[in-house]
Amino acid sequence: MKKLSPKAVRFVDSAMRDMDSQSKAVWETIDPKQELPPEAAKVALFALEQFERLLRERLGASYRLSEGEVSDLSNDLGFVCAIEQELSAALGDAQQA
Image (cartoon, rainbow, N blue to C red; front, side, top):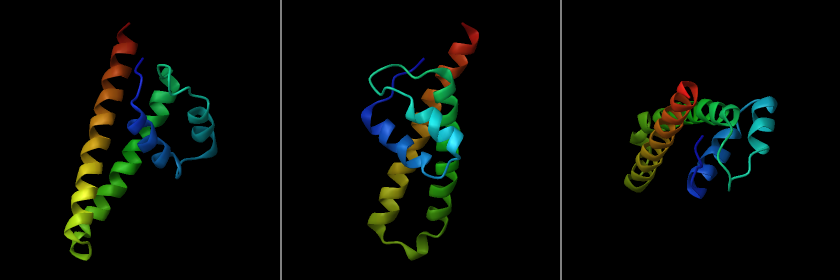
């Protein structure tokens, strides 16, 4: 599977706040220094997809945000999308193996 960077783990931790208790329990079992088990990667991907939607909604209301806040949200969204791509690719590789 895939090992996430410390920054990516922090983003997934943030995304997990709004997830159900079962998903949180799966995520809490990971060792950030080890490769992610497929189940944890799936849970992380789902949480990040929800988080991405939230970031896009916030950007949609950007008329209420400062230029700096819009920039921060855009950067966060780009990073979330990159993590999602990595996890999707890793899950695809794991299914083919």
